[in-house]
Image (tube, rainbow, N blue to C red; front, side, top):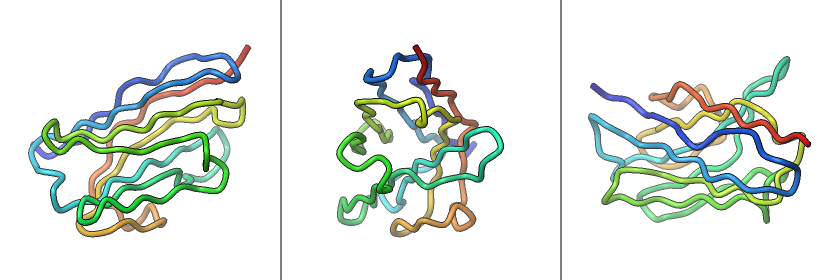
Length: 123
């Protein structure tokens, strides 16, 4: 079964850190790009970060540049996003998604989606 499973979400205080994981099964990430998206209540799905397996190139939304770092471990078929200096406005459900080829910023182009993990930043 082809699937992505996110983990690592939770409640954290402002300024804190979390690391989200996106584990793939049923397919190899070698030829895919993995994107992280988030959706806050009442808002659309926003592209946060992406990494392309072909050349390791990465993308970050302006809102997370300098705070989030995306990385991949092909041996574990897993992609991570390290989130530091978290802010209340980072609160959202975070999803990972896979697209064959290179990164894009359009959620509609991604073919495989995880179920999401909740991140709440609050004191």
